[in-house]
Amino acid sequence: MNDDYTVTQIDPWTFRGTQVYGPPISWTGKVTAIRRRHPNPGCPLCAIDPHCPQHRNPIVDQITVANLITTLGINWIRTALSDSGFDPALRYMAWGSGTTAAAAGDTVLDTEAGRKAITSFAAGATGVMVSTTYLSPAEGNGSLAELGWFATDTATATVDTGVLIARVLYPGGTWVKDAGYSLQLDRTDTIA
Ligand SMILES: [Zn+2]
Image (cartoon, rainbow, N blue to C red; front, top):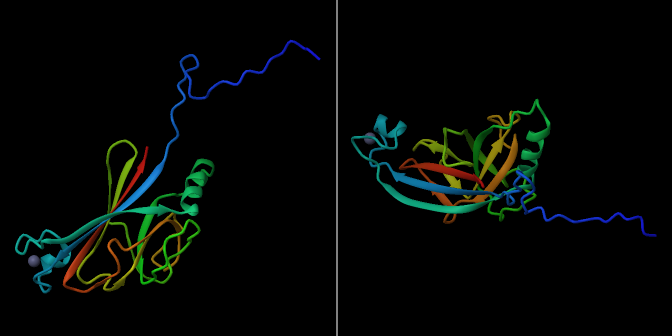
């Protein structure tokens, strides 16, 4: 039957009037581990400041790796769109001794050994956020094999709490931290 109607498929990438349909957006994460040697573990300034003016605490190692965004992480954004009562903030960085490769289905670390509230956030270019966590010489000592970032107000100081948005094996391989070193972990999320 010819009813004189035709269906036209419009390419979503084309301009329609004044509306512009942009390209898809991606979300990527990377982690930089900055290890500093603390030549004077007894120095009270070294204990709190990675740039202790007396000892200068040189960077001995700095490595950046891409990380995996989990399925929970992607659905974290989904929930943020729909739930007005949802508090999405990224709250804790956790470390552990597990060495299983990161997988999209991860919901906790293999073996969480400790966690610390994110120390600071710094907005970068459009869509970029750097979340920094600083472990002093006294903190996080032991085997650092895996790292994870936990979000929402369900994340507390208790292990395995919160929404694991990303997990990564320690950049460069497992490192056994001791009180002679501090560690700064800069997580960069880019949504672009
Ligand atoms: Zn010092």
